[in-house]
Image (cartoon, rainbow, N blue to C red; front, side, top):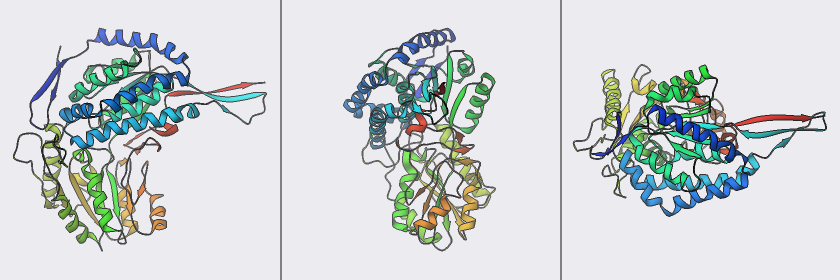
Length: 453
């Protein structure tokens, strides 16, 4: 049986090797989950909350040690890993407070003695999750799914199996048989989706992989939520507060070492402030500390894998060959680990990879624009539609622009972020369905109408 290998991206050393579950072992896990789910379903929402509150307490007590596991396996700066675990705590708190209300039956105004909508669990939900936010991505689908009475199977990214096993321990320390980590690669995914006990799939990852998952789910008529790639526009008008704008641009782009679906990717800057924006941005980026992700002073760590680094560098090289200008960076750092220099690239045209592809790394792609209409066109000239931001002192004007941007969310004078209180999800090749808020918890329930005459 092939093993899944976990490599420390900061020094390229092997952390551990994990024996995969066999097909028969996976089938046994699914049967166990199918037996556990009806029992879990019968518990009241308040009982589920009380049980799952232990998970929140676990995270709170062990936040620093869990953060170390995240940083070890995927390379984000330790301060960001701590923030990720704390964000999971805030998500738990939000749903523990609001889940009962979100799942409360709703009375309908209909010509009958009684008519209402109830929200019932679907059964077993399979989550196929990415490595870039290995705790947060799991918690934001698993907690609402469990609270609504479902049982969860997790297929985590191959390079973060240490996190996957840790999550299994965390969830099962409070109640067994409601959460299972599957130690497998992608080869068994289609068979798992086809299993009659699997009722829905939550997938976060690339649009290419999401397309394959959606195809398999379509054949088996299974509910899906897809959160795929993004190439978020960061629109800078000529009346923007450049100081605040640039500070947020750096935070938005460099979070997770640039490996975030909702990171600002395409910086669409009005020609009146284009040169000043680049000069100030360059100065800001040159102050960032690139280094050991275990050091609390580090701002930028390594990319998660060598393949990602090679891919980012290829996008930069091809774009330069096509006429783009390299302002800063654009090379692999001469040290052990998968470190890539923070990069600014400008003079970008439509045919270049940094224009139409998602860049998953510390790359600022600057696109000069002549007016608002041009900015809107460039922002929407993308296969993706996850998030975006607009920067202007005229909030009314920015709001009018926001309504014309084809994305799942737009932030004005703030960078795109996910928050438990806000519905999150994209359009176009960024996927469909919503996570978080009341909309997210209702994705994996049967919205049933009951009418009595």
